[in-house]
Length: 177
Length: 362
Image 1: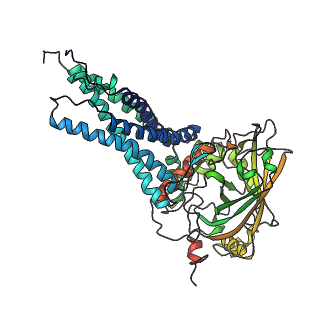
Image 2: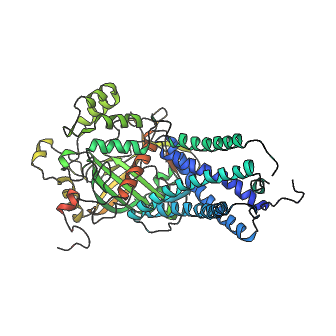
Image 3: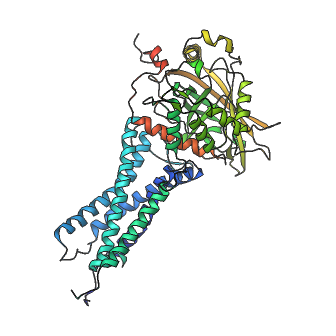
């Protein structure tokens, strides 16, 4: 073990990461869960889905700023080049999806002519004009992007554990703190 | 690197954690629960009962026309609900009259059951959407029963008809459905969309500005005097007689209905849409719905809207009726499906009135 302090993500980055990890996994479960049922859980989950999506969008934008203004710890010097490409590429995609998915959801509900209700009596303004065909395209994109996000998260968790348990190279620790 | 024990157990641990995340996702998704009813499952059953898919059309009540107008509230409804619709004032409304046909080209005489979808546009982006029927009650009380009734009505591709034994078998085991069918036999069909009463079917929970909650049903009662359709004349009527009559009548002048709120008495059932409330009830005339524009779906603005009765403003919420969340889920599935389809054939009304409405060329 090295006596050097190990490189860490800054505290705001770590807090945002773990908070969003919980919110995003919950959000994916809410999304597929509400579509699986016609029980009263449908209405309940749907009413959580919108405010949670907007919360994730706001947190993702804050996190983006934090990421741009704070140096992230470097990847291990001995990491094979293809793993470096995978690591960097997957992180760009994760950021893109955590911002794009809520925006697609908001846009699709706007195009579908639905009120974008965050809570009873409070609606967001529409960000697209009403057009059912546009709704149809965005609704499909929302689903495809959500499943892609879930697959990416599984890969992310697998890779983090690979770093933490197999390579033991400090990458997992840089986020667990 | 110092020699370390085999990494195999650590790979197993990683794999197990990933499988756990995947399994939780699959379980919530319903993959492991084939009996769970989704909006898509009921929508599939509706399509099967239609015998085919009519691309671009609603999976139920496929035949309809668009209407628009306004609602003038007298403020009396505010005693029960703080909903912006019930405060004194006027708001725009758009909607859709329809019949219970899954085939948009079916003749009106084949599916006489009238319905009205409404979308009230309230201040600050709020909306109140309604899915109203010509009867105060519904044919089944649960989503499972609705699914089973549709499954009993599946069209057999070999005969082009449903199995004649299955629906009677369903009715035999569902006294509330038998009661509904008896009820509807004695319930006169209005001769026009204009002179019928339209009912909320379900109970809803309203809350007023003082925070007092109350269960209600509501209905729109016509100013146009009621006359019943004479079933004996059905054979001689043109295929779109109901819609033709409405489109023609609307050019003569606006049509009006009164919104009557009906407050539940203690003990009235609110979770079962097959049961009517008995006896005297407090009725509040909350204002007047005026519809002054009607057009075919091709010319109107209603095609792109889903009249989901659970889209409600502050002051109104769904009751414990299990059909309300189910309606929302199924309407949404139908909307999702038709939104990516291209209409290949015009509905019967659009085909007849090609170019009807504003901007039409003779």
